[in-house]
Amino acid sequence: MRNKKVFFVTQAAVIAALYVVLTLLANALGLANGAVQVRFSEALTVLPFFTPAAIPGLTVGCLLANLLTGAAALDIAFGPVATLIGAVGTYLIGKASVKWFKWLAPVPPIVANMLIVPWVLITAYEVPDAYWFLMLTVGAGEIISCGMLGLVLLHALKGNRAVIFNNGLQGR
Image (cartoon, rainbow, N blue to C red):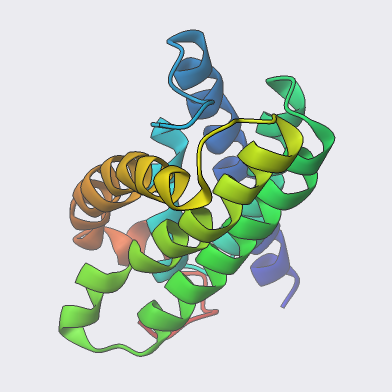
């Protein structure tokens, strides 16, 4: 039992670290913040499809990344909430064990970010654009990050999931 807990915490920590590093890379390239955000780290939001350890990993990673990139307090608070909601949704899709559901894995983080991030941009950063417009721009970035890059990652990991993610916590 102890080994499963250690493996879970280790997976979560590695995922959090990867999220931070990939966000810092996108930030250095000017892609991590603003109305259109293409965070490479958002591709990792498909990982709860494979392991529940990705839920705290992504949430903590988002929190740390927002702290390290100098985000506003509301962004530090609500960015991880959007990530948590998306991660739980992706985990539930993966838990359903329906073969074609893998195509739906990026949908929860895309939707969660499309709904929450525009409000954060308007409230915390005083972005003057309309909420619906920011939903479109944030959604476009999330479709690139979660949808396109995330699905590429999901399919790349799919064949090795038993080796990478099999910790006895899930039966997929």
